[in-house]
Length: 189
Image 1 (cartoon, one colour):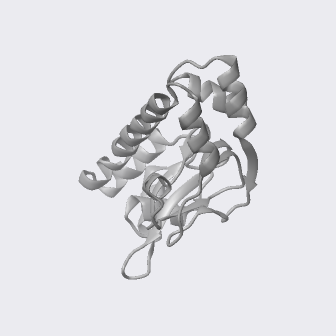
Image 2: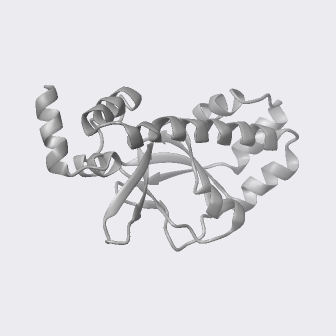
């Protein structure tokens, strides 16, 4: 819980009563490797904070190929925001890449925090803004750089992730085949 509270307090101030309410509404849950936090075709019903492990957001393209959009590591929030906020079916999966430990809030509890804690909406907005900026920062180079540069950038931006994820997910994220990824890795060594 202290990891979550430290994270939240980067974005605003809370008094002890507010911290106690957040702690009361939070539930610690574990997800096994490959288990889904949320699924395409279903409405996202929870917001999580990753204490341990790595999750990924993925989808299937029109050819039925699994595509990894991005990875979410420890000390970050995880939610399919559009599905959660608008109660619409998700178009993506959020899946545990490793065994994960999360602090989770149900939608009713999250909405109660928004209604009860003065300034919670501002804190949440700042968290979302930061996450979107990180996502753009991490995804933008994937459009303009060659595969080797994309791989090197990934190693730089995700140093704690690179050795903990399957190469198939990494290749998918980089938009290359696994054999191309193997060649790039071999040439870098």
